[in-house]
Image (spheres, rainbow, N blue to C red):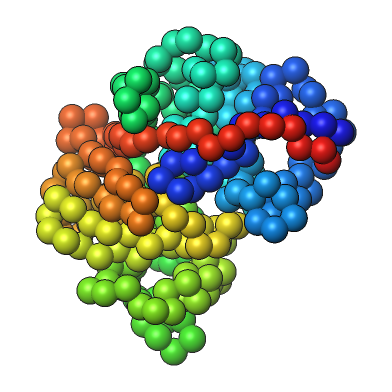
Length: 279
């Protein structure tokens, strides 16, 4: 089967986008496709694939699958790429879109299509109730709690942005942060596993992140992770409501609005290439 694709990235967090509005994937095993197409040596190489599907109540639905074949509820970098994909591939010329996802309806707005192609996303209200995130435990919320992993104790705050996150604040990034990220992801405390963010605070308006994504491993950036990190920082009294989040290849602007309790993310979406994948 030949599959037309566009590869895009948000700050280095890369995805293969596929138009499946007409059901063109047929009987393709959707859990096996990401394992092949996302392989860094044997495929195109990406952190996951994103399918453009018809929505139930709106024109478009986004479904995202990690490189290991598992489905993610939501992806901040991915949905910015999705908004640009719809716009540039002629599927929609609207700058504002309401996109259906497994995490709910997400509003996107292309704010600068001619320069840097910035996309602003209303990521919705953060979920803080622990059994909804979900995180095991008796307290209603999970803020600055201890987590023991292989003899090492981490303090973490749990937040869901449609997908679960464990946010760990650090003074400096540990050389073994990827090892710890993998262990935390698979810890028994998290029934559906978790994304992990290690956060270094520069000041009240700026932070730096290292990300371990559930189902994908170490990635260069994570939009929902940036949102979760800012929310966690505010809950712990360390950050202001509007924060710049630095990644190795760029920056996101995150704001947790007092007015409606929604989190807004603004950042770039870049096209890498397009082609046909013979699967």
